[in-house]
Length: 293
Length: 327
View 1 (cartoon, chains in turn orange, cyan):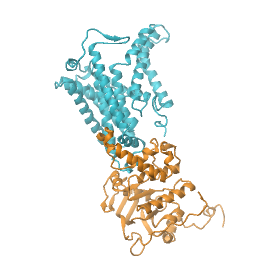
View 2 (view 1 turned 30 degrees about the vertical axis):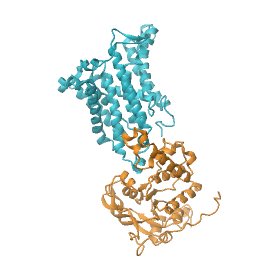
View 3 (view 1 turned 90 degrees about the vertical axis):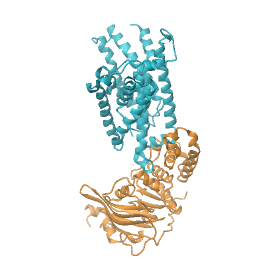
View 4 (view 1 turned 180 degrees about the horizontal axis):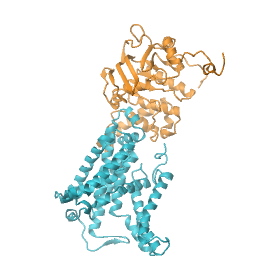
């Protein structure tokens, strides 16, 4: 593998929005539409999104400083947390009040910031667990293997296919606990694909992943788009966001403060102030006062 | 000191109703804790429900013995649902607190004099054996068998029913945990949010696991009272911890471990209960008298449980990688 070769710039999807790229701009073909979703934690308004649309079959990055409410918004949109107000619609179905497991069944699947590999299940079992509508998962069916053995074989085939794509196939019989942090991220993403999702929501897919694996993770995310999926991801690595995102949504203090194509949005003053900090061009030593200018 | 009697009593305990009761209850607990990760500290409650369900159905309602067992199963399902609805949405440790309290509530309900005509309160109930013994296909006088394993026809009938219940339960649990259903509950044990994110109704699965383990606990209770009588004092919290010890000894996340654990637990119990007083009689335990010596076995078993959890958390049959208390 010639890893020294610079990453080729992937083709960006453009023309996603209608009108000027302001916060809450309408999209040509939104898969997820969020309206007036808010959540308070005590006195703190963690999330206060007036309107947000996520474009279909594109890669959207959700960025913002720590505490901007990105993960909370993820939790709300996937049913892992309940908002105080608001409605949202995924692929035509209203999702407010729908429990997390049903959201996943509808095709909106997420991963977690702190990777949740099921440590004491093997890699293959992790994958098989992802498949939906399994007959053998029903209590009474499970007692009669003849009823689910055939489906189980198909699921295993599919799992092995995805695993080999993610270069985890030779690890299939290991406990997930024995994988490295980066491999667990890969496994979590691979497992999510077993559901046949239409929208994949990744919470910091790159956190704690070494540079060698980063490249293949990026490839996988780009592949998802090629397969017709929609990706929404939270990330702090600006190079990655610039590299693969077609659209960037910036949150600060619970609100969407800017959105647009990556090269444009990252130059906006509001984004630079909110996210990169007003000292972005200054040496860290100067900021902390250790080096006098 | 008569080693022959000590060893004979010990060997006899391998195949006794109480050992079988423990095997069933520990198997139920394996479904709860070993496979689904539910910290159930109310084993004694499920066993009491099973025991009293059986006895009261016969004495108060005149049911035949097999129907009484079905009533026990039904009662344990209801108990599991009542217990599960408020607690299964909470974190695991809350379930532990609630189950331990619920088991005490159950025991006290059977102990209170308010229901004496039905429950017999502190004196318990007996004399419910006609239906069960009437169905006994075995007939012989006195005791039959060999070595330490000689039984009357009635004792033998109890053991046969116990063995049938254990065999069926083992097959049932083995089939379940090797299926995709078992995969889901093991996933829930590891991280229920991850399983939820994969589109599984975690609450429903936990409830199913709680019910199945509860039924096995109730069958353990039935087994306990099948030979002679039922007493509320049998269903104290200590019973729960003994079942836990048996489970951890054999291996919590295994199917055959609980049965092996129950057998070993009672072998050890019987061995110490015979050995310690004998040692005290010949003056080897210092000033400790005969009765105190018999009680000493509980201290030793407690210490054994601690050592087990620290040094061999996976039990005898378990895979060290699959179950440890350190994650």
